[in-house]
Image (cartoon, rainbow, N blue to C red; front, side, top):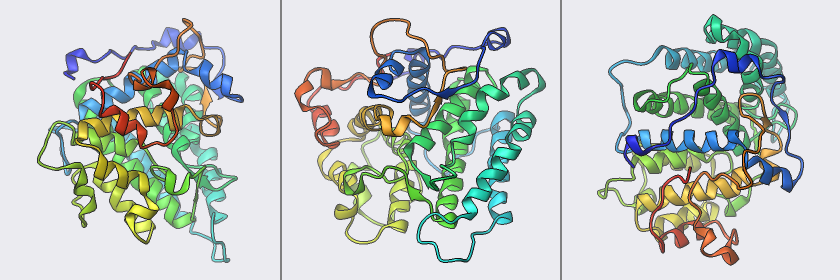
Length: 358
């Protein structure tokens, strides 16, 4: 889809921020709350944001260097570097712990103590009023400090954190900066989270085991498949031929899996293997991943119940119909919904390719 056809992302002005009465809080407690969330403006904003990020990287490969890096991207990268340095200051405890080294709780406490200062230093003075509205997403972006785990819900919190920064125009929704968000900032975030997982032995939050796409992450597959979407030289089955060059986020995620899992790929990552052998092109992979993300991450109460909502991401219901991160082929075949994630791709291959229905 051409950039001119993408939905525009709204702006929240300073005067709008002043009218927000309370920061984000945990709002999802039941499956009905999940359906209510899908009717809110905040959910629609997130769908537009992800589609714009995805489309911004089509045909762009790593390593990639823009002509100039925006100041906002530079500042956010420095912030993630600071969080990475905290790992050096807080080494793992040497006592035997198979999962979840207790030092992660210390790391998390430091983050909570310094969050206000870090975000105030990040934002220009006129946006300091937004710190309480952004902070909850920031704090839930790196794992759960009590359970000592990390998963797609925490990754989604980081996505919502970036969305909030874009709504207030610290980040800007233009193709160049959106490309930097993915290929510079999100890549840096992934590397930080991988290090947190390795150093502190974080458990996957809500793993589906062999039936899940990835124990820890999802967005990297969406962005990586977008990078590969409009070319035909690299087939989907290329992921089965190791070693993979780090030229896109999809390959980077697959390489990461091989670093942390052992045994035959088709056994420990059956969904990714099924995609590799059963989906004809990267366009279908990208479209199917959007559908799977909406159903298996955003649509699962056990995942999103830990994400704070409201504030900049308005908890309002503007009409009686749910917004969608994608045009849903399951409207055509409702009896087959969610029986197995690979159906997102097999069914998608049967129908005309649709883009974001927002």
